[in-house]
Length: 256
Length: 291
Image (spheres, rainbow over the protein chains, first blue to last red):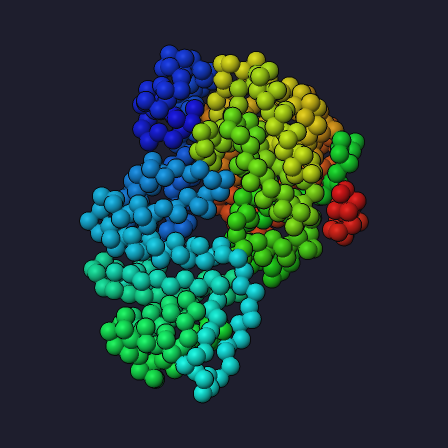
């Protein structure tokens, strides 16, 4: 029955499929279900078969609203069918159904698949951050950075995720939510995603900010983090931009 | 008549749904009890669990799952069961329910409630699994009759007789979904009153009510509308047989505002007595009494 339920074709095609006939010969399968007064056996099976893609669609649409918006309803349905054929649910929860979407999109037959994969990676990070264990705090900003600033280390919010993209995934997601046109052209971007008081926040970062925050999150001292960020970004962050970034990161509860 | 387990009538409750979280936290509506969908609160440390914790502090909660696959042939998922027990302990859930069905085979989960062939072999298989699950959960497992759209030629036992024997053999409770009885009776052509009369009434722990959709050649259990008059009529009949039991309205598609859902649930009071307020006045005392 499962082989028929998950088959993307008609119930007739499904019951004749290799997946189904491997489990039960066609002749037996056709007799296994009783007709009702109003429906033939295959029509009855088709009720379950029709509900399966809807359930998969709803689960993935909930986690990937931006992806659905970009693809449009019809193409998103095709995407769902292609995806669940390769990555069917093996969990008691549908919350994990979409875990492999970013990787899957990298090889999906769509001309903008690299952009789609970036967009999906951002949406997956948001979903995972939503479900992460609650951050008990404290959210208090770190004490004033004094003369020993160079050797100072900082804690970071446990829900913090730092992401780098080849496309402007954050701007695209904002545009899709607002119903605006989206550019899928390559344009490097960086973002921090974290949760505070059960609300997920996204903070767009510059290249230098991304590398600075990444180094701090890895436990480096501020001095070493600044040097690493300068090397990886190709130029040092100005003192004013570092001050501005720290003000935001501490007020957001990212740094502590 | 009290139920076999001495579990309390929790009154008239509603399903705890994400779209109502804000209303429930801010308005704190007077609801007799909430039913939480088990899987939505496993593996999350986010807002859903926070809301469930706040709700469970002041209102009785029961858990209702969709992935136990009690009739499946894959081994029971003990990791899942341990998480369900932990959640039940955390929320002080008086009972845990799921469906008489299977959800998939060979490691896959279709996330649908697939029907079982009702045979002696199935009965033995499910009975054994129910006993194991009850041991792990350390509280009664309550099984719901699913709505179904196919019948197997291999079935040799009517669903109501299967339930009667299963509930007694495995010593578990029943979540009687009256809408599902009505939907399946239409789809399979049996008499719903015969079903209600035949099940062991002292094993019924909870009722479900919901709306369904007429698809022309069959009825579909959509949880997307108000309860139909025919279902209210069956609910009244069943109540006469079991006495008042915890009664819950399910509304899962096109969900209206909380007050509309709650008002629909409270229509059950026209068919069953209201909850004696002392029963759920103190959640901790209630749980301790049935621990």
